Amino acid sequence: MGKLLIIRHGHTSLNLPGKDERLRGWLDVPLDQEGLAEAAETADFIRQNHEVDSVYCSDLRRARQTGEVISRKTGATITYTGDLRPWNLGVFCGQRVREIIPFLTLLNQHPELAAPSGESFYQFYGRYSHRLSALLAEAENSVHSIAVVTHVRNLLASTNIILGGNKDKVPVKGGPHTGSLMVVEKICGIWTMYTGSPANLMDSPQPQDLAALQPIAAA
Image (cartoon, rainbow, N blue to C red; front, side):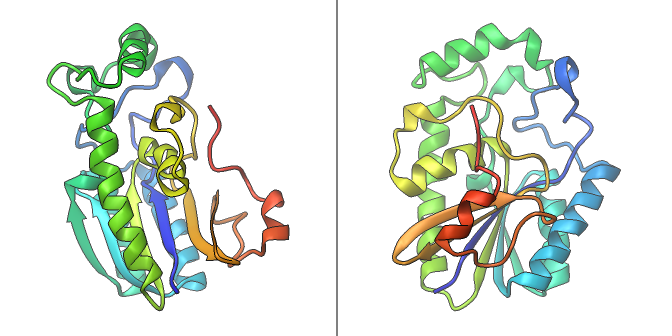
């Protein structure tokens, strides 16, 4: 039985700290120098600790660049797909997050409501959960690992999807930082997830070790 490695793409110029953070969404921004370094570090960790059969990647540039580094260093084939894109927030993409909080709050309170020129949260969740479920089944039937390069909201949703949680309870902020890796595997017959940076992840921890690892996400 293989593992599913879910990776957040590397840092971009829009991943700004605090009040200057801008919403990325479907904007096709590239990795910056910090992001390229993160992608290389994550790829090196994966190469050293996991044998990867395939890489599946969001088709946005920042994810493609991250996935291509992993593919090159592991020798795994890469497949691009729009199903691994983040929530499409339409006209709000590129704006400062602090300036559009009322609109984002409204969309979170009404997950069936589509963002102007975008999609609803339910549309995003359905699209991503369908693809993630297929990738999870592929990993379960694989000898080695399947790598998935996606975005922060997708990682936040992954816990609920894999564990069958409430889709209305997906955190709306926080989450693993750029370049982070979530490992999904069955331990003692139970799907288990652990996440962190390459510097603090260990290979195949046992259940008694999991408490020492960084939580998947916090609201």
